[in-house]
Image (cartoon, rainbow, N blue to C red; front, side):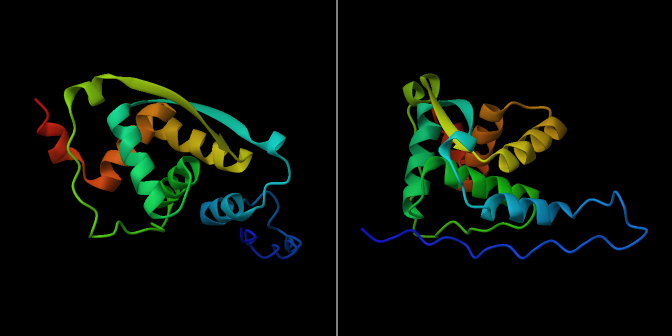
Length: 155
C-alpha cells in the first residue's frame, strides 16, 4: 500500500506590521489553513453526527468513491466550494440517480470527524444559513449531484 502524501509545511507567519493589530486573516486563508493542516492526533478531531435519508447516503458514498475519498473528505470539499472556490467538478459520465420512497423516508445516523478549524468554519457557515449540519449536508449533496428532478420523480 502506498504512503499518503502530506501537504508541504506552512511557511512561518509574518510578524504583523505596525498599525495593523487585531487584523484578521482573509477567510480564504483560514479555510486553506484549516484544510491543509495535517492532523497530529485523532483525539484532535471533533465528531459531527449527521442524520440523512438512505438515498442521500447512497449518493454521498457513490460520489465520494469516484474521487477516492471518504464521506467526511467529500463533505469538506463541498463546504470549501460553498465558502470560496469550488475545488471539484462533477464528472459528466456519472449516471443520473433514481430513488424509491423507502430510500427517502428511512434515515441513518453516522458520525464524521472534522478538524477543529474546519468545524469552526462549518459552524459559522451554518449559523449564517440558520440550519443544522444534517440539513446542510442533504442540501449540499442535492446541489452537487443535481438531484432535484430525481427527487421530484419519486411517487
